[in-house]
Length: 138
Image (cartoon, rainbow, N blue to C red; front, side, top):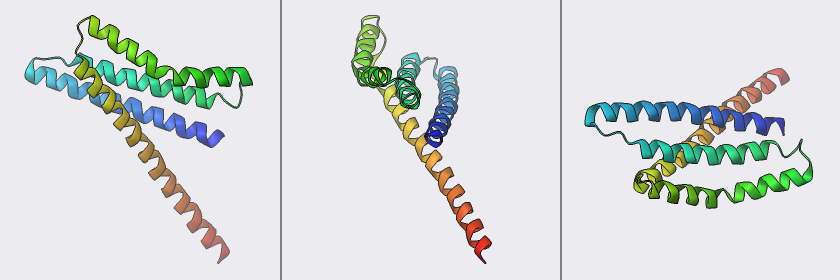
């Protein structure tokens, strides 16, 4: 379980790096076009927060009581409802829903990208371990 927690932490770090790069791209677009696409970044942050909720609830399953684990799982399942309500409230405030949706989609792509990076790094570590084990046998 400790390995899973470290992998989740690595994915969270990768998501923060992608968020910083996204913010830099949005600032560059703001400088070039004069339009600040703040709703896109809001959507990205909503997607990142939902991933964090799921990751932290998953990481706490082994050390928390059973009732808290079930509550965390239910809260992670209710996050879609919460995201829908937040998007509706932001729409009522005049924020662009299309930009929020694109931000959410980009955050999901960033999550997939961070998982792929983590799996690729693990593959290199496993291959190094295999080569050391083969060298030790000979």
